[in-house]
Image 1 (tube, rainbow, N blue to C red):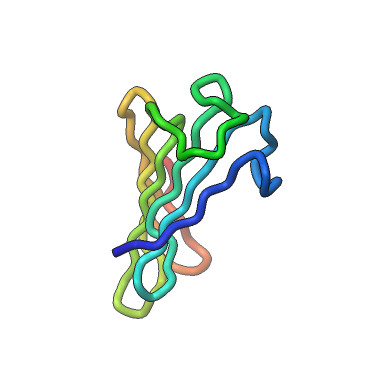
Image 2: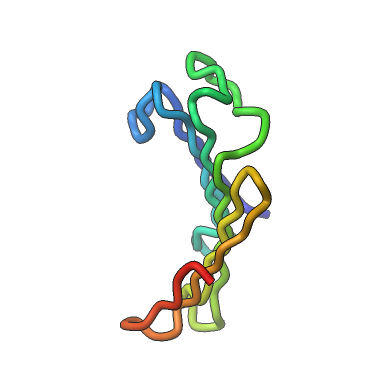
Length: 95
C-alpha cells in the first residue's frame, strides 16, 4: 500500500495561491504517483484533501534494479503523454 504526503497552504512547497499537490510512494520508497490541483479548482484555505479533477496526475514505473523506466502524465482532458528513461543519458519524452 502506498504511503503519501500532501502539500498545502501550511508547508510552503506549493504557494497557497497556486494550488496543492500530493505524492505517493511504494513500500520501498519509490515515488509512484504525484497529483496537482490548480488553485481555481480547490479551496486553498482548507487543510482537507483536495477534491475534484487533478490538473495533472503523474505515474512512475521502475525496473527490478529500482531505476525509473517510465512516467505517464494525464491531464484534465484525459490526454496522456509518456516519458521513457532508456539510459541515464537518454530519455524519450512526450510520446
